[in-house]
Each structure stands twice: as C-alpha cells, then as structure tokens.
Length: 115
Image 1 (cartoon, one colour):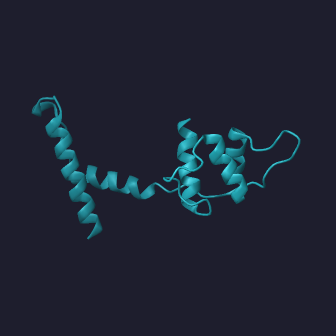
Image 2 (cartoon, helix red, strand yellow):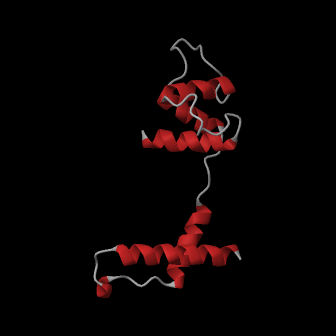
C-alpha cells in the first residue's frame, strides 16, 4: 500500500514539474514505472547519520571543542553536543532534535556538510 502511495505521489509531482516547464512536449522525457521504482529505491537507501565515535571525531575535527591543551567535553556527551550547537550558532533553536537522540546526529551532519 505504501508503495502505491509513493508511486502516486512521485507521478503527481513529476506531472506538475513537467507541466510547469517551458520545454515543448516533444522534448519531454516520459516518466515510466521503472523510473518511479528506481527513485523509490533511492529514497529507501538514504539512511540517517548514525551517532558513532568516528562521526563524533570527524565533527570535532571540523568544529574543535577542546582548548588546545586537552581540556574539553567528552566526545558525544551532552556537554559536547551543546558545544557543537554553540559552534554552529544554533544553540537554543527550537528546530533542533533532542541532544540525546539519533536524529540530533543526522541534523548536525546535514548542517556541517552545508557549511
């Protein structure tokens, strides 16, 4: 059932985009069911960023949370996450997922790759 809903949504979106384009109808590509299925599979392959030690280290190397003398919060701790939010200028933003959630890591990952 979800697959049918997704296919319907993708088809509707594609129809709107194609209908709004300035390209002549003869130049437009036909959206096939195979194309829609391929797009749906890509959506399923997208995984949120996991909160791993390697990821914490990568983010810390970009946003440096210690004072250069080995003093700073433990990687991945709530204190560390607060410092990361501060460094990104987003501390206190109501759109940020809870610091103790896996969604937080994905949110920060998207922000840090945009920078």
